[in-house]
Length: 446
Image 1 (cartoon, rainbow, N blue to C red):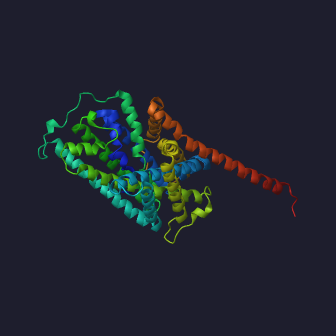
Image 2 (image 1 turned 180 degrees about the vertical axis):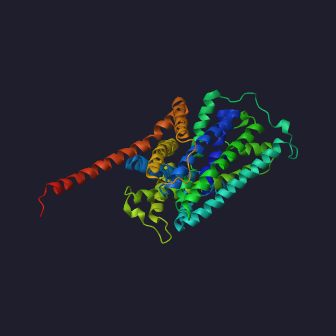
Image 3 (image 1 turned 180 degrees about the horizontal axis):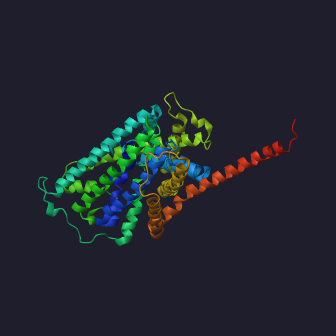
């Protein structure tokens, strides 16, 4: 449920309108291709997490497989991504709540939402898990109900509805051809990002290996069914020309089927999705920061935990960083906050590529040591290389498409900047250690 909570957000309920508007009837194909990438990445991640469970998850796997530099870059890049996402979701949630409370400034609502989610995370990891479970449950129930209504509409069993007058279109599969489908795939890959949270949360479970094995093997199929199934029904029942990029296609379909209160109901579901991702974002950012402190790559003072094992200072710092990003969102929405969002947009490709490369290397190391592999990647190493090929294809597609090119370039700024910080930090430590080493090697023994 935590993995579902991290994946099923406003990107499905609202952002899917952009995918359908771009890919047309072939939108389910774009979601299926993205689902294949997610399936393979999660299987590789499950193999590593089951063999080496860790709160740092793929950051620690990258460190074991590729060195300390890789772990540092991946860990801080991922923390940066979720801090920006937390701010974005807080702003999005405030806009929804502001529709019901128009007299309260949005920045106050954003701060309040952040505060409530922070308190939940500060209480205990169990509190986070329970909250995320119920948030995810609401979203799952909403999708199941939607699928039931849409299937009923497809077969013409709803009052006043017939199947033949619903599945109509303009005869074209996609408004932008192959380029439109490729553009849609790039959006889909990022909308699936978040399922990897389960491997971080599993490290705090009673039985980490069992938890990550079960979650990673089942969540992908549920995500694909929910995404591909719901989007497939939408394009069957609503002409893609009637789908707007800035509106929820779910509301469009429900209103077309004559379901009363569809817009209000979807607002509540989207708000739940936003709060769910915000809750998961604070948890994930704090745990990644906590893992970095354990490796000496963040201030040691952040490693302090409560008697329940909650990393209180890591949560507070991640929340404060989120509040600062919220302030930037209101003070400089176009200049600074837009840059932060775009710079976080391509992080999924960086993380997924790191997972694939780490799995290829770590699998070899574990086998050489004679270690156990409770979960094994299918078709190793061929499917691992195939996954890297798919990710490279998505990156090439972003380079080709003008709308995605800038996001790809900006998305490399954060990892590159963190890499520079790592190199400077390492050189500084070497310069400090060098005189000490010189003294120890040249001084006469006493």
